[in-house]
Image 1 (spheres, helix red, strand yellow):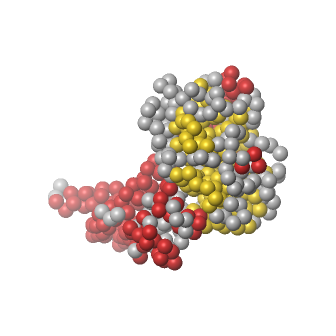
Image 2 (cartoon, one colour; image 1 turned 120 degrees about the vertical axis):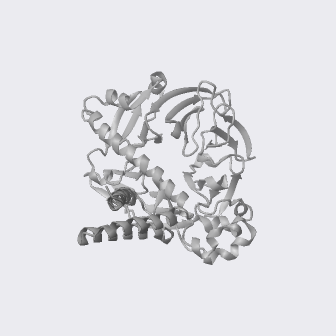
Image 3 (tube, helix red, strand yellow; image 1 turned 90 degrees about the vertical axis):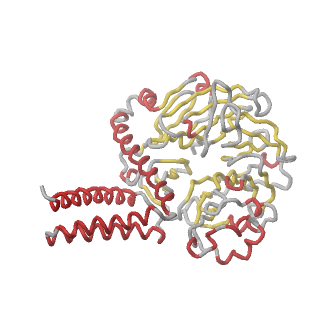
Length: 469
């Protein structure tokens, strides 16, 4: 075999590997929702790879295979030595997760084919229950969704049912749209999915997608017939640059032209729950940036606030918060490590609590009138997450619960605290794939008795009290 044949075989093999890389990139393309010009090198790589391989086939000339290898290789090198490398690696990780979910869906379809006959038995194949005695005593109906599962499950007095299933819905399984957050308004089901879409399922099972910008998830305010959607946008920040002098934003690179349009600004979109039209969009950035204290807490250049929960105050929730009113909004802003209370009429900040927790999640008012939240990274004894309870009138920490040596919990993101009343709570340690029940005497502290009641085989997307109309 002469040297020409060796080189020819080498370049054919190289081009084959580049073709596999092309297929992999196209697979990534299917799961992308945001594109920027900073990734132009990727597109050029694909263009040259396609172009020269096509010429090689058309002209039957091996020189084009060689050009394909060198042109693709050079652009490949440029692409992966630029700052986009880290971001692209994140897409690789997401793709591996998607591949795992594809496999999981395939297995799951076989598991749940007889679910109507054996709801509880089939459920137990997917999710382990550890304490049926406690579940039997919880008389509120709970709704549960798990990453990768096509079903929304309800649990009440120990009885487990599938409330709604998306296993046969092409509308949801295209692009891995599994249910994330689930609620009901009148006869309509409102569903946030895992890739930032919001759907309404009508009584006749017609699925309607709401045309909104990307969003985190939604919350219902049934007293006002509104849906509060945690949305975000990627606007230019040029008009805000004059506000950057007194806070961390003055150091951010996205004020340069190359990063324009990359920053994520949180907005709160208020929908009419009857007609599903947009009533108002609240720009959280404009509220925070003008606040003399909160504006100085900004520490992230890309994801400024990461609003991750909204709690609508009921009348009884106002008793411990001065100047608060029914309908005001308690909002958790993860990147500021702050919880704020917005006036429902003026959307001005009435109250804030900050720097007492680490990238918290899911702030609520409990039945004692206190603020309770899931502190994702604040505990370093036993588990790394904990539950905190604050007196809003004094901003004093009343107590914390960080798990026990028998039952640690740790969820670096997500996480929930569900108030069952009578100083009982459910803790959703999402990334642990576990749900705990804790029973406290008067307030949340280390005297609370905890029990593991549920463990899933994938991250727990959401659990909440479900109120049927």
